[in-house]
Image (cartoon, rainbow, N blue to C red):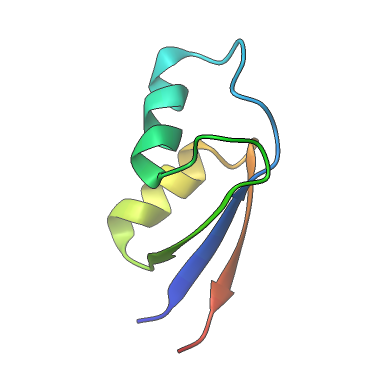
Length: 61
């Protein structure tokens, strides 16, 4: 399995608490912060939930 590079591109201000918690669980705290996480179904579900706030790309190992 590969990895995902996820960047928070829109602010969490005014977003529902569930979206804030999801971003926090991905390790995203600040705008333009990037994290690299394993590509698995749990992470993909979180990415799908925050698709309007983040940018992501697959990284081959």
